[in-house]
Image (cartoon, rainbow, N blue to C red; front, side, top):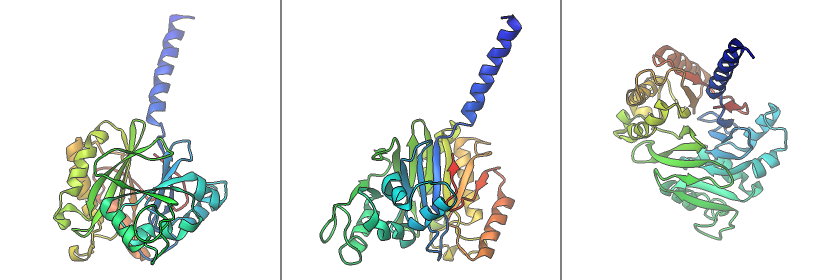
Amino acid sequence: MTAYTRLFLCFLLITTNIFSQKTKTSFSVVPLGVMGGIDEKNLSAYLIAPANTTDYICLDAGTVNAGIEKAIEKKTFKVSTSEVLRKHIKGYLISHAHLDHVSGLIINSPADSSKTVYATNKCMEMMENHYFNDQTWANFGDAGPGFPLKKYHFQTLNLEEETSLTNTKMTVKAFSLSHVNPFESTAFLIKNENDYALYLGDTGPDEVEKSNNLRDLWTAVAPLVKAKKLKGIFIEVSFPNEQPDKFLFGHLTPKYLLKELHVLENLAGKGSLENFKIIITHLKPPAKNIAKIKEQLKAQNDLRLKIIYPEQGKKLEL
């Protein structure tokens, strides 16, 4: 082998390794529901698993069954709806107890298999007292009022404490969000090996909510952005910029999303969010508002974010 050939092979090996690192997929995501508002067949719910596995955790559960059926229709899943529900979904992370984030969990509980439901203390109390209470609905949990059927294990998350997600390789850290202060929502930082994904439940901007919750979250994840270990952020934009602050009801607009992400960029370093994946959740109808939100995000994207609008049932890779 000539010196030139050895040099060429060495160059090929190095460039192949660099390319493979850049294109490494860490997470598989299947949106079961992507909207906010009135479409009960398409409300907030995202399955996330380590890449090349079917060990999914459901991030919120507004829509479950209809979302699985849509994923089967799009050939994302090639097994039955029941098999996805009972075998592929290993547990649920619930950001807050508003019905558009939990109705799928409640309605599908009789057909589900035993697994863990994770939530912060206030969210868990609301689900136990108002839903799984043997009055509104049978208590499928292992705590709370009435007669617990013990199908679900209710596990309370301590804020900013890493918790293993049962029957997966992933862990989670929960962070507090403000959703019409003082009502609490939650952000979930999911870890798979050395990579992360961040999912935010409903949240208003710090400026309107008179809160530091988003700044505290950005401070926590900025080192991961800088190290390129955070593969994407799922975050809501519910209304166009024209929505008055007093009618935001704990939600974001394109203007406020970009304001918040500028805070994150300042913490992580200039240019750190260029081509960074921002997955937009919780778009509220009517269609003209959704179109306006997309136009405004495109026009205001001075950070050069890679903005993604997830499609129900269609797989995403992070």
